[in-house]
Image (cartoon, rainbow, N blue to C red; front, side, top):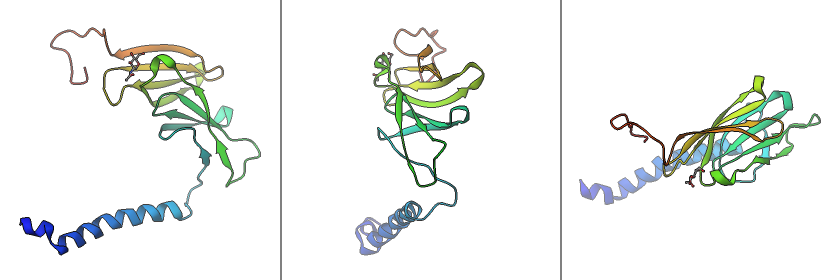
Length: 158
Ligand SMILES: *[C@@H]1O[C@H](CO)[C@@H](O)[C@H](O)[C@H]1NC(C)=O
């Protein structure tokens, strides 16, 4: 059996098995999409979540490296235009935490964002920001240093 993994047959099999998904990804990236796609210049590398903010004609995006941005879509937008991302929330005291999923709370003109230390799993919170000023409305810690949990009730997420 061990010799099979060193054999040419296995290497060929490995090549085809990995080539198929790569070819598929290249195909998806290069073919014109069937649905409309908005292109934009990002200021970072990984965007966790995005939502369309219809009242303000913009996308709101959350940054995996922490913070929020908006991508305005002007009234004269035409398909193919490349939009610009504008960072609107960057909080020094939350540095090192990711901004994850969020929801737009239209009634209260705010956005509710899940904040977490994804890699270390030492902190998590729910943050709210005003949709107009982008000031923080509140920050509620859900877990982290100094968080009191009764012994025996501690779950695996601390
Ligand atoms: C996440 O934010 C909390 C609260 O300010 C901070 O104590 C913690 O160090 C941050 N996490 C990381 C990984 O930096």
